[in-house]
Image 1: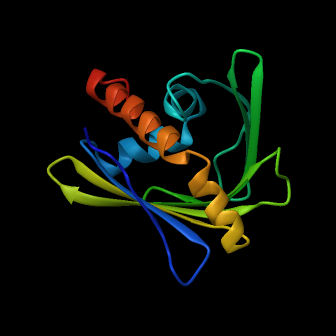
Image 2: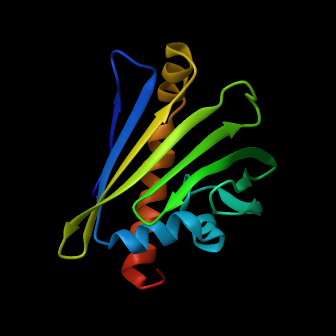
Length: 157
């Protein structure tokens, strides 16, 4: 299994995630900007995602609800920069409205139909960063990327 490398920066309240995919940068860009595709892969296996709003353009915004049974988790943000090799956006969990992260995603073309995704989330404090890391986020990240792999393998993207 191709697990994501998740690292905390020792000097800044940043979480960095790196993962390779058997996909082109264009495919990963589409997976992150097409709301129907995004809803199929983001988050843990046991979650269902409903897109409430999605406008993937410079200055656009987004909101989705992830649910498991009767539990719901709402997330929202703004797209600051959307281009084929890079997405910059904010990310907020509505259960913690003061915890806004600035995320940067970079799609690095490795050639031969492979791409390395570099994701960086700058949070407001070391305590906030550490809470993310202790939340079990690695399960959602890895299960979500496994679902993305499956979509890529099936030719959906």
